[in-house]
Length: 326
Image (cartoon, rainbow, N blue to C red; front, top):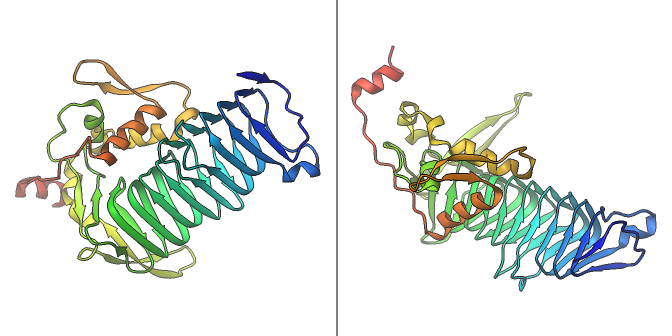
């Protein structure tokens, strides 16, 4: 790649192909605020990037600083190489990544008016008015102020006035919310992994007893919850939750599941000062927690290559009295 140490190109469009940019790509004068950036081949930007429109037509592409666009940040559908945003991505318009043959990786929050992602991995949260996700992993929350559509995804949790669900929806936290009734296509499966032994699954060793995933029937198990703020204002939302099903969860040592450690390591990503491991695999080798290994693990769950077992546990009356009794 051709190395560019000082980026001072003054054009309406910057085209990068086989370039290593050692500086940020940000405007120096008002006229450069309307400048577009087009990525047409292997490119690495070591600083932040600002553009009116950012278009990735061919990769691989990596930007190590924050990204902001006035109009749109888009990854074209025919991009087959990896596209990596190490830090937060924001847009006054839209963030769109529809690569069919490759994956797009977001190492921090995504914030825009509209977010439309396919085959993407988000290590943190998504905030937008309208959100559409298909075959995606989001370790944090998905928060839409208007509409949310999820199709075959793994997310920490979600909250939106209108929620549409289809295929398989995997939840990493106990509850998810919608103001209006959940709209689910026939055959939609909702699976909660909040007390599944994700650490053991990642290491390829047997899962701990009394752990597993919990299926949720959105048509029969939708709950209404009253939320209140500090000012005393209340609102009623609908909730898909396993809190009522995990009475036995207090009988487990959830810290030993390593779930929060795994998800936290994934959400911190490049901010970690060292690489942690989650223990040894079945061959005795340490399993490193890098953004790449964590993303691949959750995509294996989404693709069905790794299947957490369904929770099936029983407890004696004496065990329940010891925890909940006087």
